[in-house]
Image (cartoon, rainbow, N blue to C red; front, side):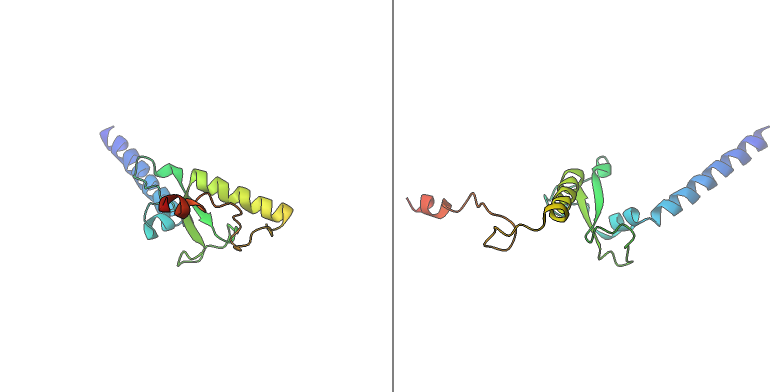
Length: 120
């Protein structure tokens, strides 16, 4: 009876290790090993406790493009990742924002008069 339980336990452990190896071959696991656990936009740092909130963003928005060097990935928190996809959807739907004079897409600079205020 004890031998049967040990055999079953060994099978469960072997299966769990197999599944873990398969998951680690996925792009998320590879990206988490390559890059520091920091959001590429807001610089929020992550630990094992909140790592589920750190996602892998495909820069070209093609989830099938997963080069081994990770050049199409960046780690983003769930909030920044959602924002990035929202901006991409708006760009596809409405075209790029041509109102900007800086070329970066931003039209308002809340600190534009800060230098004048500090001089006073």
